[in-house]
Length: 313
Ligand SMILES: [Mn+2]
Image (cartoon, rainbow, N blue to C red; front, side, top):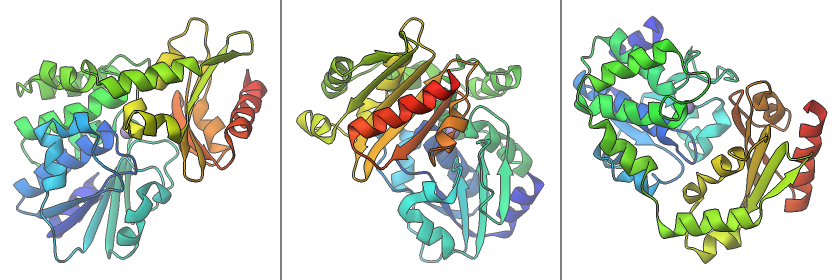
């Protein structure tokens, strides 16, 4: 972490890069980092392939990302919550053209693609960014704390996931100490829906199937489903949780159509490991939540995933 703090203190202008199809952790971590950089008198601009999902844009500290200033010159790049270079999507070009590169992440599968790499074994990248901010000697404030809280909520299921540690809770307490209006953030992100999200979930539940005596639940959404409800990929975020919530299910997956095939999200019970399974298909992620893209038609993609699961069940 000292290396990364020095990297930051030596620079003046920074590109802060989030992963494609940004989630709350990559956006919250990026926003907190940009606030901290600005407190140090640095200039920073956010880069990401993909739009900020509508719900997240309602939180001013996340909306700040798209309002971040445009830099004329970029000499330093920092990736947040990015496990491998390809997760930058179209931002990879910028990264490759930048002289000084660093990253802060929390994926066990991280490929150490930057010059300065900080990968922490934490349940959200936001916790690693909190540690960085403390290392930099930047005082936590309301905006930083709210941005980090968005990351924490997203990746820990609001501190409900099985691997959540005492350290996670104690770090989150530091955020609560800044009067972050946690209830407002939670209501905006998790307790408010839209008609299109509910319609999509309904469609996904129509497609829902069980396999291997109910131990596996899976469903899919095609591009036409999204188009029908004028929805985007982030509108189907809750679909995998619906599959996972079914009684006796050990593995669940949700595939959605993308231009080159199907993108799969997978979950499993703690005694299994979907990170390894997805890695064997060219993807990655965490032990209990991972993903991959399968360049195939829907039937083939489902068969490939079921075959992989049958090997470990
Ligand atoms: Mn993350």
